[in-house]
Image 1: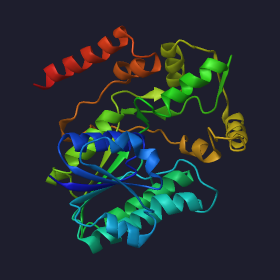
Image 2 (image 1 turned 120 degrees about the vertical axis):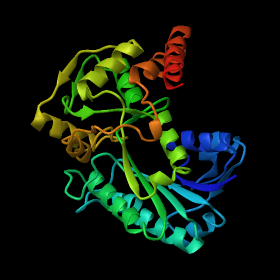
Image 3 (image 1 turned 135 degrees about the vertical axis):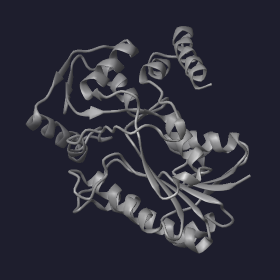
Image 4 (image 1 turned 60 degrees about the vertical axis):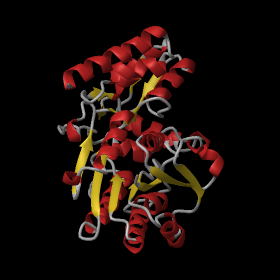
Length: 320
């Protein structure tokens, strides 16, 4: 039984990772600013939810006491502006990994698994990707002291995602979708496959010192994904793709709205194809979007459940 601290464990991907760790008997420490936000985790056996500010070094070191591994999933999609990136990106994507590395060394935690982002690079067009690259650099620099693994997922889909669900929700209310960057390319990866990759990495010594891209089996344009979400949810709408200038203008205007569904930095991120030729690690077979998305976009109808069960049954047969 291992003791593992999961930063960002209350989020979309985090709850899947924590559930898998609990199912195999590990003890998991999940820090959160507000304990009530983690009610979905409190009921899991072997999970300890702790109110703490992970941005404070002493608190982080206390969380890591007696831990065998740490997993960092903390991330934000938007930030105030700055160069080379804004302060919110700097705090979460760069400074927190640096503090986490130092805390792991101080607490003698030997294993660290970190979530970055596909196409993260110091010269990337968006602040988000540049900050993710600097966060990666902090993990890479610690390889002499820690057994580290980095994962770079494409956009992640699954129940409660803020990706396909958002597209489906918008089409319930909009008669026409005016879509920025309609030709942007994505290779969505299933949240279950991402969680499985993280959990398996903890026990795979071959993953030490390595970085892996996590992508699904198929590349889609943004237009195709929006159209699919509308079709499956039963709210298909006409889609009008915007050109480059209008896409930028739409992103800028959305920055001014509550919720900020899109930002200019998101627009810049979509300039790069969010794709990779890499296979999933550890022999994991990628789950098709079409096998899972109908279950939560259309609802848990018997037919949609059967579609998912049939897919996974076929997958298990092929892997035997």
